[in-house]
Image (cartoon, helix red, strand yellow):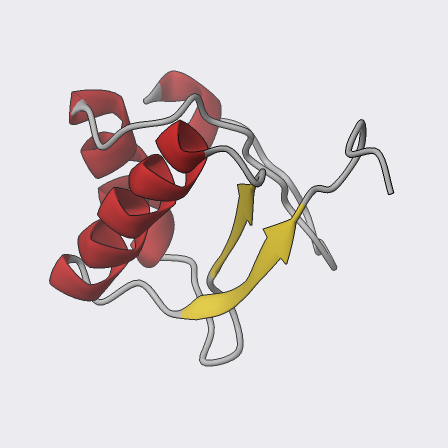
Length: 84
């Protein structure tokens, strides 16, 4: 909470918050604190990998974003390490 509410970030173009997979209490708190500062073009970028476990986590994250009215800016498929 202190990191998100007590720091004077000044004018930012981007604030990237990297969170572990899931929709824990930390995710809920972060969205609640950040929503006060979000503009109409702000939102989440969700990153996934081709593994089914990762895609399942992303589906949960997208449902979480819908439930909390957090705009999804995009989904990035990290293909690093995939032989092609």
